[in-house]
Length: 103
Image 1 (tube, rainbow, N blue to C red):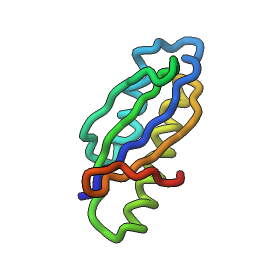
Image 2 (image 1 turned 60 degrees about the vertical axis):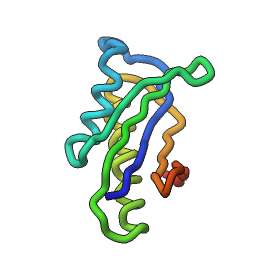
Image 3 (image 1 turned 90 degrees about the horizontal axis):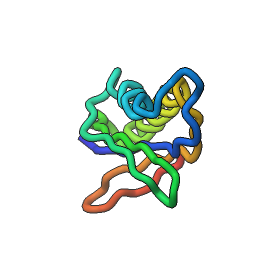
């Protein structure tokens, strides 16, 4: 099963929500349909960035990548319920490297 990483930069938590809600929201956006391998929050150049690593069932590379794009968009939508975000990124594990894919 190919492994992917999707993530967003978190800009601002929406009124009525707490920062601790952002990562669990992102994980829920993925875990509803796919196996989550890992998740985390990093600060990149002073900006919080969340990332969720997940698996896609084996098909064709093109089909897997398209499904991963849909998952990445669901992750962003789930984060959007609790925080404003930007810079949606998607990467696919290939060999020992993470290759960036267009979303």
